[in-house]
Length: 157
Image (cartoon, rainbow, N blue to C red; front, side, top):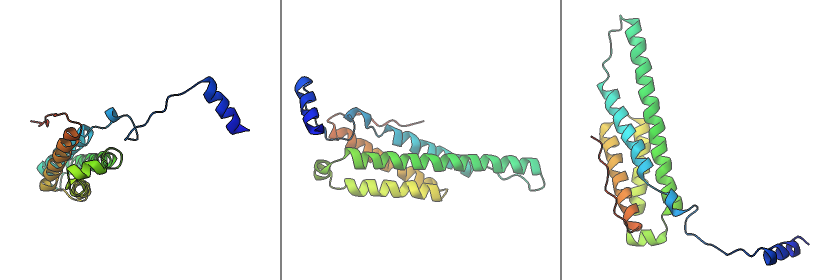
């Protein structure tokens, strides 16, 4: 009975069938959000490494130091997680087998980038943060080449 009703609705209101290769419209995918998050990871890592520990005999300065350190770490952790999520969304929702054919190292690049996100959460390591930026740059380049558009990599000063 329900299927008969649906057939009747389709006869009255014909709908054109549509298909897409992505979960959402292609315009929603962009590696720039991963890059912005990774830039924050680099920035917070630099800030953490530059923090000077005050004298333990100054409780107010020590409390301010710990507060600032905790805030920097929290931001670094959140942004590394955001970068990882954005990379994984591109991997699972945008990139398809045809992309792997054209870019056979894509799986390895994405896998290493997500592992770097984890390393940036676990450690305070500027080399890993910079390596994450480089990995995301590679993903950025592949992404835009796959769309037959060249978008220049933004380098923060």
